[in-house]
Image (cartoon, rainbow, N blue to C red; front, top):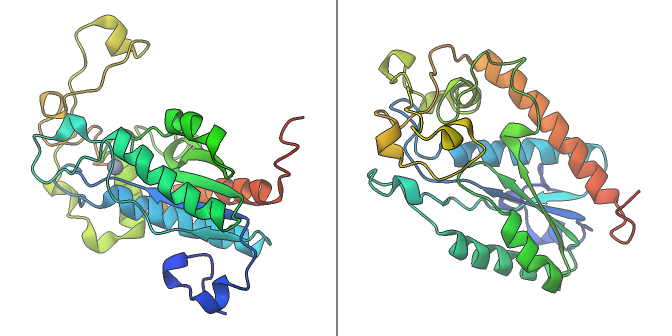
Length: 254
Ligand SMILES: [Zn+2]
């Protein structure tokens, strides 16, 4: 058996045909600027690492989980004026999601978890539309808000701030530039009170909000904080995967 049968890209048909997979995990990221110090693939690194480590822990607890190759493009309509930010519209994402889910449906994989890594992605409405005509149970998890970040970071930040920078310093330190090369991630707020307070919502025009593409100051980031948060997040998600793997889809309510 392959060393990590829970990562499909590393796994052969020899393993796959003999394994009764219960849950597929689809990491979904984005390709976008992350201040001056983090790479464009940050969200993809995060979703892939969180997915594979959570799946490893779940597999060791007996759940048959498999991580699919990540989708690298997010909804980035607010960043189209930033060079090489690549947008995938929500309607395109819905089509991609439907194709993946229907592939699994035909093969008898009963459950699909989207592991989302990008704040501009929102799969809930897509699932609402897809679920009635698809036999696979579909759910979505944003890895950054399944554990309260406050005990780990004084100011987690929204985008390329302390949380994300610390995580990348743990996961891929060779891709993180020295923090004295980063901008301060200072972001302008909406003038209209309801939008500023967050109970009214509109997407932000990124280049009008931040000069360095970051939202949140990365200056206090460390790999050690990133490791602690990563362990807490993957513990939480692996527990969820174990629960979901054994859940009876006909009896989902108390
Ligand atoms: Zn990000």
